[in-house]
Image (tube, rainbow, N blue to C red; front, side, top):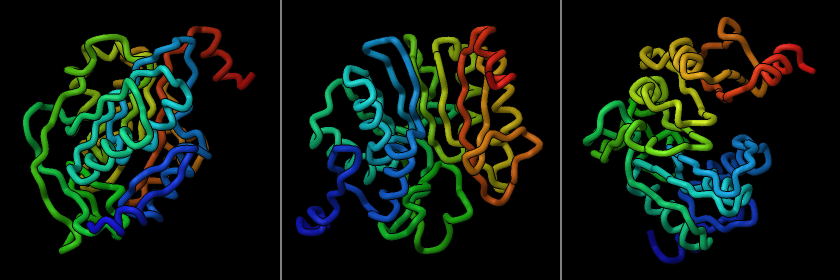
Length: 257
């Protein structure tokens, strides 16, 4: 990418300036995260610890720092090209207490194959994944080897928010970390469903969250849905929030009061 192309890729979002690969794709992410408050959460802790897995170019990471300026953020991104932009954006915007990590979350540590867009203009650049998704076909997709870490290895102290946008490995990653999920106070994740990846099960995922003490809420198209009310197109996306609620909070969620 030439210097002039890099300068053209600078986009304003949420009061920050970002280097990005695809302007249209970036605009959608910015809308969801900053305008839609997709990852909003409340805590009384002045310095909450946040794990941002699937950080992309860092929009959610920057949102968290605007929400809680003293937050500590661990931002993981697997795609090496996108990771370079993530690091550049963190530095360019002067974020402190943010540690970028070039790695994918996976059930086992080591190295995994990662499917990525070979063309910055392809919409699939947003959906780069360790799982071969329906759009990972033909000459528009490239395969690279990337480092992988387990979620349990990261949960060494209390985590105020675990944010997952890992394109199809949500169930497997949470299952691996079951013994340490008690250290996580809340989860916000994007669930990616497809017939090509039946192991990623929303039923199993919500069972894992409930067993770990969370009260999961599943949304599709912006509305809360029951598991039997999910529209399972191929592929389909869901937003899942897992909160640790006290009895009074659980009653309010049930009654809507």
